[in-house]
Image (cartoon, rainbow, N blue to C red):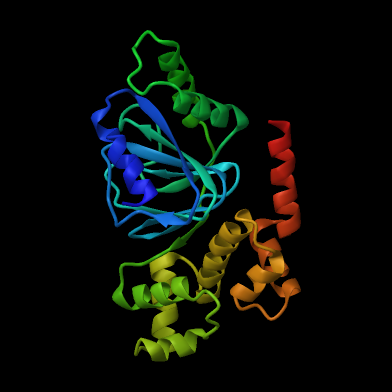
Length: 267
């Protein structure tokens, strides 16, 4: 049994009825859930170190620094983690907090992160008049105020788009054009581009770029060098990759992670 599945087996999260509980998981090697599964409780996945990707039937969600991916209760999902990843799962009762009904990325403040860490260190079966219960109350109030982001790669349930998405996910350096992909799935380029726009709200180029951002953040968070990431994603040069990253994220990879490190030092 994988580390993630083993930890969940040891901690029957849905059996515990407290408003929220937290679980800390440290993966020494790369790991992933054994398959799609769901819980009655919603889950906020917070990466403290390393890289975590959450997959749901409609997309891939990267857990970037200072953010968490929210998965509402009842939603099928699986997680993939890189080696030497340290993460927290905050499991929330369905009616305990005002949280989105859809998967999303939530900003995580230093206060919220510290509350999650503290609650993860406390017993899960805490009493209603305990200090842990009071901290959970503050945490849930703060959680409902967090800014919603949408840093993910949408995956359509359309069979043709799913084939393309699976291929790009497996080989993100694949540089085939929209016309070449259209030939691959036996439709016209015009039909394919309209389908992608309708199903994802993005052009083909923007859709593939979103995957590159998700993959790049995962690799860079795990310690990969920018040059290696650029090569893995099929860019002709490091400068071309940095330009793409800056347009999408508003800053270069170096500045993005330098600001992340600075924020960590202040905590």
